[in-house]
Image 1: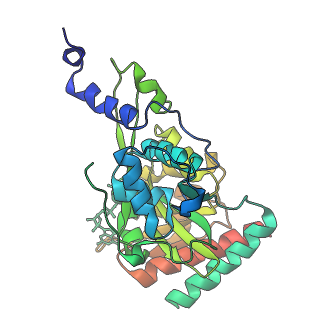
Image 2: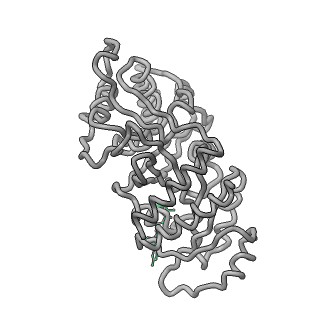
Image 3: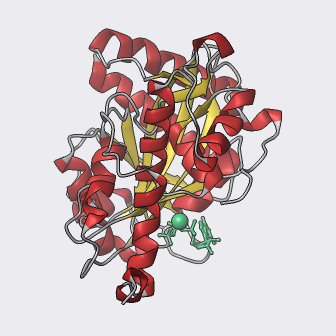
Length: 125
Length: 197
Ligand SMILES: Nc1nc2c(ncn2[C@@H]2O[C@H](COP(=O)(O)OP(=O)(O)OP(=O)(O)O)[C@@H](O)[C@H]2O)c(=O)[nH]1
Ligand SMILES: [Mg+2]
Protein backbone atom coordinates (compact mmCIF):
# COMPACT_ATOMS: atom_id res chain seq x y z
CA UNK A 1 0.00 0.00 0.00
CA UNK A 2 1.42 3.35 -0.94
CA UNK A 3 1.51 6.15 1.60
CA UNK A 4 -0.54 8.40 -0.65
CA UNK A 5 -3.54 6.10 -0.37
CA UNK A 6 -3.94 6.99 3.24
CA UNK A 7 -4.38 10.68 2.57
CA UNK A 8 -7.77 12.01 1.70
CA UNK A 9 -7.80 15.23 -0.25
CA UNK A 10 -8.18 17.41 2.80
CA UNK A 11 -5.15 16.07 4.56
CA UNK A 12 -3.18 16.21 1.32
CA UNK A 13 -3.87 19.92 1.31
CA UNK A 14 -2.53 20.11 4.82
CA UNK A 15 0.66 18.30 3.97
CA UNK A 16 1.59 20.82 1.36
CA UNK A 17 2.33 23.76 3.67
CA UNK A 18 4.32 21.36 5.82
CA UNK A 19 6.42 20.31 2.85
CA UNK A 20 6.90 23.88 1.62
CA UNK A 21 8.25 24.94 5.00
CA UNK A 22 10.42 21.83 5.36
CA UNK A 23 8.81 21.20 8.70
CA UNK A 24 10.21 24.28 10.39
CA UNK A 25 8.31 25.84 13.24
CA UNK A 26 6.86 29.32 13.44
CA UNK A 27 9.39 32.11 13.99
CA UNK A 28 9.43 34.56 16.84
CA UNK A 29 6.31 36.65 16.72
CA UNK A 30 8.00 39.96 17.47
CA UNK A 31 10.50 39.53 14.67
CA UNK A 32 7.93 38.81 11.97
CA UNK A 33 4.71 40.55 12.88
CA UNK A 34 2.03 41.31 10.28
CA UNK A 35 3.51 44.76 9.74
CA UNK A 36 7.21 43.92 9.84
CA UNK A 37 8.70 45.39 6.65
CA UNK A 38 10.80 43.07 4.53
CA UNK A 39 13.17 43.57 1.59
CA UNK A 40 15.94 41.69 -0.22
CA UNK A 41 19.43 42.01 1.25
CA UNK A 42 22.50 43.11 -0.68
CA UNK A 43 24.17 40.27 -2.54
CA UNK A 44 27.27 40.26 -0.37
CA UNK A 45 25.24 39.52 2.77
CA UNK A 46 23.75 36.32 1.41
CA UNK A 47 25.04 32.99 2.51
CA UNK A 48 25.17 30.54 -0.37
CA UNK A 49 22.12 28.37 0.18
CA UNK A 50 20.03 26.32 -2.14
CA UNK A 51 16.62 27.99 -2.25
CA UNK A 52 13.33 26.18 -2.79
CA UNK A 53 11.14 27.54 -5.62
CA UNK A 54 8.85 29.07 -2.99
CA UNK A 55 11.77 30.79 -1.31
CA UNK A 56 13.05 32.04 -4.66
CA UNK A 57 9.59 33.45 -5.44
CA UNK A 58 9.49 35.33 -2.16
CA UNK A 59 12.97 36.65 -2.73
CA UNK A 60 12.00 37.86 -6.21
CA UNK A 61 8.89 39.52 -4.80
CA UNK A 62 10.95 41.36 -2.18
CA UNK A 63 13.64 42.36 -4.66
CA UNK A 64 12.09 45.62 -5.79
CA UNK A 65 11.34 47.29 -2.48
CA UNK A 66 9.76 46.90 0.95
CA UNK A 67 6.57 44.97 1.68
CA UNK A 68 4.93 44.07 4.98
CA UNK A 69 4.63 40.42 5.97
CA UNK A 70 0.86 40.72 5.53
CA UNK A 71 1.27 42.11 2.01
CA UNK A 72 3.63 39.30 1.06
CA UNK A 73 1.03 36.76 2.19
CA UNK A 74 -1.67 38.66 0.32
CA UNK A 75 0.26 38.82 -2.96
CA UNK A 76 1.46 35.20 -2.88
CA UNK A 77 -1.82 33.79 -1.53
CA UNK A 78 0.12 31.53 0.77
CA UNK A 79 -1.17 31.04 4.32
CA UNK A 80 0.35 33.53 6.73
CA UNK A 81 2.02 30.86 8.85
CA UNK A 82 3.79 29.43 5.81
CA UNK A 83 4.95 32.86 4.68
CA UNK A 84 6.37 33.64 8.10
CA UNK A 85 8.38 30.44 8.17
CA UNK A 86 9.79 30.99 4.68
CA UNK A 87 10.65 34.61 5.43
CA UNK A 88 12.31 33.62 8.64
CA UNK A 89 14.52 31.11 6.88
CA UNK A 90 15.42 33.60 4.16
CA UNK A 91 16.32 36.12 6.83
CA UNK A 92 18.52 33.66 8.64
CA UNK A 93 20.42 32.88 5.46
CA UNK A 94 21.01 36.58 4.87
CA UNK A 95 18.80 36.85 1.77
CA UNK A 96 16.25 39.16 3.34
CA UNK A 97 16.38 41.95 5.88
CA UNK A 98 13.44 42.74 8.16
CA UNK A 99 12.41 45.90 9.95
CA UNK A 100 10.14 45.04 12.86
CA UNK A 101 7.81 47.85 13.98
CA UNK A 102 9.37 49.97 16.73
CA UNK A 103 8.62 48.85 20.25
CA UNK A 104 5.64 50.71 21.60
CA UNK A 105 6.37 53.28 24.22
CA UNK A 106 4.05 55.99 25.47
CA UNK A 107 6.21 58.81 24.15
CA UNK A 108 6.71 57.23 20.73
CA UNK A 109 2.97 56.54 20.58
CA UNK A 110 2.10 60.16 21.13
CA UNK A 111 4.45 61.28 18.39
CA UNK A 112 3.14 58.65 16.02
CA UNK A 113 -0.51 59.51 16.71
CA UNK A 114 0.26 63.17 16.06
CA UNK A 115 1.93 62.23 12.80
CA UNK A 116 -0.95 59.97 11.76
CA UNK A 117 -3.51 62.65 12.55
CA UNK A 118 -1.62 65.30 10.60
CA UNK A 119 -1.15 62.92 7.70
CA UNK A 120 -4.83 61.98 7.54
CA UNK A 121 -5.89 65.63 7.71
CA UNK A 122 -3.47 66.60 4.97
CA UNK A 123 -4.69 63.79 2.74
CA UNK A 124 -8.41 63.96 3.29
CA UNK A 125 -8.97 67.56 4.42
CA UNK B 1 2.82 28.02 -7.01
CA UNK B 2 4.63 28.50 -10.32
CA UNK B 3 6.41 31.77 -10.77
CA UNK B 4 5.54 34.39 -8.22
CA UNK B 5 3.40 37.47 -8.74
CA UNK B 6 5.09 40.52 -10.16
CA UNK B 7 4.26 43.88 -8.69
CA UNK B 8 4.22 47.48 -9.82
CA UNK B 9 6.39 50.08 -8.20
CA UNK B 10 3.46 51.58 -6.27
CA UNK B 11 2.72 48.22 -4.70
CA UNK B 12 5.84 48.60 -2.59
CA UNK B 13 6.04 50.63 0.60
CA UNK B 14 7.31 53.96 -0.62
CA UNK B 15 9.77 54.85 2.13
CA UNK B 16 10.18 51.36 3.55
CA UNK B 17 13.80 51.87 4.51
CA UNK B 18 12.98 54.60 7.01
CA UNK B 19 9.30 54.29 7.83
CA UNK B 20 7.69 52.99 10.97
CA UNK B 21 4.74 50.71 10.25
CA UNK B 22 1.69 51.07 12.49
CA UNK B 23 -1.75 49.52 12.33
CA UNK B 24 -5.34 50.23 13.20
CA UNK B 25 -8.03 47.56 13.23
CA UNK B 26 -11.34 47.97 11.45
CA UNK B 27 -13.66 45.53 13.13
CA UNK B 28 -17.33 44.62 12.99
CA UNK B 29 -19.78 41.83 12.51
CA UNK B 30 -20.51 40.04 9.25
CA UNK B 31 -21.27 42.29 6.26
CA UNK B 32 -21.13 45.54 8.22
CA UNK B 33 -18.87 47.18 5.62
CA UNK B 34 -15.28 46.48 6.77
CA UNK B 35 -13.94 45.59 3.32
CA UNK B 36 -15.78 48.52 1.76
CA UNK B 37 -14.32 50.91 4.33
CA UNK B 38 -10.76 49.72 3.80
CA UNK B 39 -11.19 49.83 0.03
CA UNK B 40 -12.41 53.43 0.23
CA UNK B 41 -9.25 54.78 1.84
CA UNK B 42 -6.45 52.33 1.01
CA UNK B 43 -3.81 53.40 -1.51
CA UNK B 44 -3.34 49.79 -2.64
CA UNK B 45 -6.06 47.43 -3.81
CA UNK B 46 -7.15 45.71 -0.60
CA UNK B 47 -5.42 42.40 0.01
CA UNK B 48 -6.44 39.47 2.10
CA UNK B 49 -4.59 36.71 3.85
CA UNK B 50 -5.74 33.33 4.92
CA UNK B 51 -4.73 31.25 7.83
CA UNK B 52 -4.90 27.49 7.74
CA UNK B 53 -5.87 26.17 11.10
CA UNK B 54 -5.93 22.74 12.54
CA UNK B 55 -8.15 21.64 15.36
CA UNK B 56 -5.04 21.22 17.47
CA UNK B 57 -4.42 24.77 16.37
CA UNK B 58 -0.78 25.57 16.97
CA UNK B 59 1.41 26.35 13.98
CA UNK B 60 2.38 24.37 10.96
CA UNK B 61 4.48 21.99 13.04
CA UNK B 62 1.40 20.15 14.12
CA UNK B 63 0.65 19.07 10.59
CA UNK B 64 2.91 16.07 10.96
CA UNK B 65 0.04 13.96 12.21
CA UNK B 66 -2.57 15.24 9.82
CA UNK B 67 -5.18 12.56 10.36
CA UNK B 68 -8.42 13.75 11.82
CA UNK B 69 -7.68 17.44 11.82
CA UNK B 70 -9.93 20.02 10.31
CA UNK B 71 -9.06 23.30 8.69
CA UNK B 72 -10.85 26.58 8.72
CA UNK B 73 -9.79 29.31 6.42
CA UNK B 74 -10.08 32.77 7.80
CA UNK B 75 -9.74 35.82 5.65
CA UNK B 76 -8.67 39.11 7.07
CA UNK B 77 -8.34 41.94 4.64
CA UNK B 78 -6.18 44.96 4.84
CA UNK B 79 -5.08 48.13 3.12
CA UNK B 80 -2.30 50.66 3.41
CA UNK B 81 -1.93 54.41 3.70
CA UNK B 82 1.39 56.23 3.47
CA UNK B 83 1.09 58.89 6.16
CA UNK B 84 4.47 60.58 5.77
CA UNK B 85 8.14 59.84 5.24
CA UNK B 86 8.16 58.48 8.78
CA UNK B 87 4.94 56.52 9.11
CA UNK B 88 3.01 53.98 7.04
CA UNK B 89 -0.41 52.98 8.34
CA UNK B 90 -2.00 49.57 7.79
CA UNK B 91 -5.72 49.01 8.26
CA UNK B 92 -6.73 45.46 9.12
CA UNK B 93 -10.32 44.34 8.66
CA UNK B 94 -11.13 41.78 11.26
CA UNK B 95 -14.20 39.59 11.54
CA UNK B 96 -15.85 39.57 14.91
CA UNK B 97 -15.65 35.90 15.79
CA UNK B 98 -13.98 35.07 19.02
CA UNK B 99 -12.93 31.60 17.95
CA UNK B 100 -10.14 32.90 15.75
CA UNK B 101 -7.99 33.55 18.78
CA UNK B 102 -4.61 33.30 17.11
CA UNK B 103 -5.57 35.70 14.38
CA UNK B 104 -6.96 38.19 16.86
CA UNK B 105 -3.76 38.07 18.87
CA UNK B 106 -1.69 38.69 15.77
CA UNK B 107 -3.83 41.59 14.75
CA UNK B 108 -4.34 43.18 18.14
CA UNK B 109 -0.68 43.03 19.19
CA UNK B 110 0.78 46.50 18.85
CA UNK B 111 -2.32 48.02 17.22
CA UNK B 112 -2.82 51.73 17.89
CA UNK B 113 -6.56 51.20 18.33
CA UNK B 114 -9.71 49.98 16.64
CA UNK B 115 -12.58 51.45 14.70
CA UNK B 116 -15.74 49.45 15.34
CA UNK B 117 -18.19 49.54 12.44
CA UNK B 118 -21.78 49.22 13.57
CA UNK B 119 -24.99 48.71 11.62
CA UNK B 120 -27.71 50.56 13.53
CA UNK B 121 -30.25 47.97 12.40
CA UNK B 122 -28.27 45.11 13.91
CA UNK B 123 -26.87 46.54 17.11
CA UNK B 124 -27.03 43.26 18.99
CA UNK B 125 -24.56 41.76 16.51
CA UNK B 126 -21.96 44.26 17.69
CA UNK B 127 -21.92 43.23 21.34
CA UNK B 128 -19.52 40.32 20.82
CA UNK B 129 -17.17 42.46 18.73
CA UNK B 130 -16.99 45.20 21.33
CA UNK B 131 -16.38 42.60 24.04
CA UNK B 132 -13.44 41.24 22.06
CA UNK B 133 -11.92 44.68 21.56
CA UNK B 134 -12.18 45.41 25.27
CA UNK B 135 -10.75 42.02 26.10
CA UNK B 136 -7.65 42.84 24.06
CA UNK B 137 -7.40 46.20 25.79
CA UNK B 138 -7.71 48.27 22.63
CA UNK B 139 -9.07 51.81 22.65
CA UNK B 140 -11.81 52.29 20.09
CA UNK B 141 -14.35 54.57 18.48
CA UNK B 142 -17.72 53.59 17.02
CA UNK B 143 -18.49 54.34 13.37
CA UNK B 144 -22.14 53.86 12.50
CA UNK B 145 -22.20 52.72 8.90
CA UNK B 146 -25.34 54.29 7.58
CA UNK B 147 -26.94 52.10 4.96
CA UNK B 148 -29.43 53.75 2.62
CA UNK B 149 -32.93 53.92 3.98
CA UNK B 150 -32.07 52.87 7.50
CA UNK B 151 -33.40 55.35 10.05
CA UNK B 152 -30.79 57.33 11.96
CA UNK B 153 -30.91 56.42 15.61
CA UNK B 154 -30.55 58.91 18.37
CA UNK B 155 -26.93 58.84 19.45
CA UNK B 156 -27.92 58.58 23.09
CA UNK B 157 -30.10 55.53 22.46
CA UNK B 158 -27.26 53.89 20.58
CA UNK B 159 -24.81 54.64 23.38
CA UNK B 160 -27.12 53.06 25.87
CA UNK B 161 -27.79 50.04 23.68
CA UNK B 162 -24.05 49.44 23.24
CA UNK B 163 -23.25 50.38 26.83
CA UNK B 164 -20.51 52.82 25.80
CA UNK B 165 -18.35 54.93 28.06
CA UNK B 166 -19.12 58.64 27.91
CA UNK B 167 -15.85 59.48 26.18
CA UNK B 168 -16.11 56.81 23.47
CA UNK B 169 -16.64 58.71 20.22
CA UNK B 170 -19.58 57.84 17.99
CA UNK B 171 -19.54 59.01 14.36
CA UNK B 172 -21.73 58.27 11.39
CA UNK B 173 -20.04 57.29 8.16
CA UNK B 174 -20.66 55.95 4.69
CA UNK B 175 -18.06 53.23 4.23
CA UNK B 176 -18.22 53.67 0.44
CA UNK B 177 -17.07 57.26 0.68
CA UNK B 178 -13.39 58.09 1.05
CA UNK B 179 -13.79 61.37 2.90
CA UNK B 180 -16.49 60.08 5.18
CA UNK B 181 -14.42 57.01 6.08
CA UNK B 182 -11.33 59.15 6.61
CA UNK B 183 -13.31 61.39 8.97
CA UNK B 184 -14.23 58.36 11.07
CA UNK B 185 -10.57 57.39 11.21
CA UNK B 186 -9.57 60.91 12.20
CA UNK B 187 -12.11 60.82 15.03
CA UNK B 188 -10.58 57.58 16.28
CA UNK B 189 -7.02 58.91 16.15
CA UNK B 190 -8.00 62.05 18.06
CA UNK B 191 -9.56 59.84 20.70
CA UNK B 192 -6.41 57.72 20.87
CA UNK B 193 -4.41 60.89 21.36
CA UNK B 194 -6.56 61.92 24.27
CA UNK B 195 -6.18 58.50 25.84
CA UNK B 196 -2.39 58.67 25.42
CA UNK B 197 -2.10 61.88 27.44
N1 LIG C 1 -25.80 51.30 1.11
C1 LIG C 1 -24.65 51.01 1.66
N2 LIG C 1 -24.11 49.80 1.42
C2 LIG C 1 -22.92 49.49 1.98
C3 LIG C 1 -22.24 50.40 2.81
N3 LIG C 1 -21.11 49.81 3.24
C4 LIG C 1 -21.09 48.58 2.71
N4 LIG C 1 -22.18 48.37 1.93
C5 LIG C 1 -22.51 47.15 1.22
O1 LIG C 1 -22.72 46.12 2.18
C6 LIG C 1 -22.20 44.89 1.74
C7 LIG C 1 -21.20 44.33 2.73
O2 LIG C 1 -20.06 45.16 2.78
P1 LIG C 1 -18.59 44.58 3.04
O3 LIG C 1 -17.67 45.74 2.96
O4 LIG C 1 -18.31 43.42 2.19
O5 LIG C 1 -18.74 44.11 4.54
P2 LIG C 1 -17.69 43.27 5.42
O6 LIG C 1 -17.86 43.77 6.80
O7 LIG C 1 -16.35 43.33 4.81
O8 LIG C 1 -18.30 41.82 5.28
P3 LIG C 1 -17.62 40.42 5.72
O9 LIG C 1 -16.17 40.52 5.40
O10 LIG C 1 -18.35 39.41 4.90
O11 LIG C 1 -17.91 40.29 7.17
C8 LIG C 1 -21.59 45.14 0.38
O12 LIG C 1 -22.52 44.77 -0.61
C9 LIG C 1 -21.37 46.65 0.37
O13 LIG C 1 -21.43 47.18 -0.94
C10 LIG C 1 -22.83 51.69 3.04
O14 LIG C 1 -22.33 52.54 3.75
N5 LIG C 1 -24.03 51.94 2.44
MG1 LIG D 1 -15.05 41.71 4.29
